[in-house]
Amino acid sequence: MEMSNTFEVRINAINTEAQGILSYEFVPVSGGELPAFAAGAHVDLQLPGGMVRSYSLLNSQNERHRYVIAVALDSKTRGGSKYIQEQLKVGDVLHISRPKNNFPVAEDAAKSLLIAGGIGITPLWCMIQRLQDLSRPWELYYCVRTREQAALLAPLKAAGEGGQGIVHFNFDHESGGKLLDLGPVIAAQPPGTHMYCCGPLPMLAAFESAAAALPSQEIHVEYFSAKDAPASEGGFTVVLAKSGKEVFVPAGKAILDTILDLGIDTPYSCMEGTCGECVTDVLEGVPDHRDVFLTKQDQAANKKMMICCSGSKSARLVLNL
Ligand code: FES
Picture 1 (cartoon, rainbow, N blue to C red):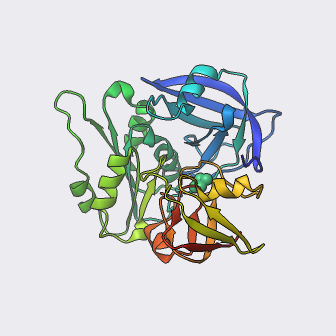
Picture 2: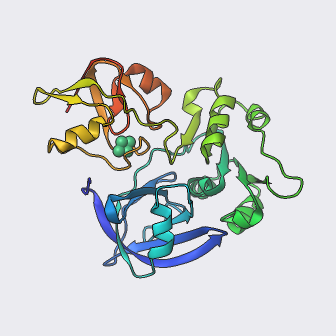
Picture 3: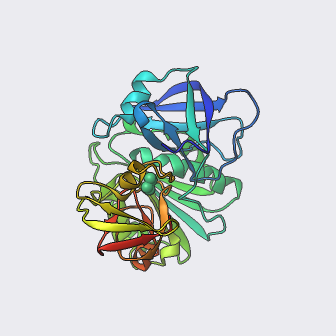
């Protein structure tokens, strides 16, 4: 487990935000300020048993005395949210990473369109607070099954009443409700609008499809889980360029696991291609990309890869390790 760049925080408050959603306020263990962050950032929580889970910071980036995250209980995941909701209590001390930002907001955009599904509202609420501070126009579509499952309803309503931003709620499991059709929403935006989406995989796929013809630098998505299965075919050789060592990756094993088993230290965190921690330069060969961190352009260029989940299409890969 990569433990550099982590530090301790204390849980100062736990609050119920909506049905199945709790928020956690972290403060410095021994006073002072926390490392600065920008809207869209997340932190990795180090949990027992080597579990690492990433959560977006939802409070204003102006605050240095606390970080706030929200955790939705998800029975389909590998147990991180269940542990957090059932075991953690006020006063507990946790190891967390410094904030990382793979989902920054373009502060000078003519307009920002934000599309949230469920707990995906958290980084977008942080962005809205920033856009409000900067007096930039924004519009939010917040899709949730029911009103009871919607976190941050009150502050979002208040932000939407200020005149600078527009808030649309879409409760698709309530009477008369239906899934939001993203195509017309995206088509209605003025040129130069930067668009952000954070939510479940089907929503992200619909968003990326509806926005496919737009300039890629204006389209921003945040994945919290992998969309493809990790590469497990194996049967190729990795050359570690710095030492010249050749390593055979067998079927059923990831490049990262193979390298770690040899006692070679290299950074990693999520192990599923979402966090970007294990990004590695590719000097020769063709990776089989399975991550959601690199852009389509980066993947097509084959100059970088995520070694925790991606494999190889060529018999040999030379990596800058
Ligand atoms: S460890 Fe997170 S992307 Fe590889």
